[in-house]
Amino acid sequence: MDQVNVIAGVLLEDAALTLEDFARACAVEQEWVVRHVQAGLLGGVHEVQVTTWRFTSPDLRRARDILAIERDFDAGDELAALVVDLTDEVRRLKSRLRALERHGH
Image (tube, rainbow, N blue to C red):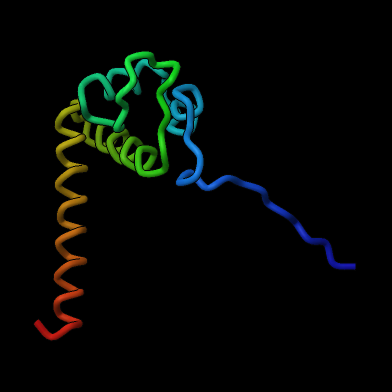
C-alpha cells in the first residue's frame, strides 16, 4: 500500500508571526529584530508594544536578506538594509523591463 505524507502549514500572507516566532524563524535573538524595527529597517510595525507586533512573509524574507548581508559581508544594519532595498529595486526594474519588452515597447 502506498504511504502518503501530508504536510500542514499556514500561509504567512494569511497569518502573522509574533516577535518570538519571527526571531526563531530568522534564527536570531529577539533583540536583533527589535533593534531593526526600531531603526526603521524592518517591518511595517506601528504598535508601540513589542508583544503586539506581527510579521508577515515579506517581513521574513527581508529580515533573512538583511541578516545574510550582515553576516556574509560583516555589514552594519543600515548598510545591509540599503543593499536589500537596492537589490529589490533592481529586481522590480528588471521585471518591468521584461514586461515592456514582451509588449513590444
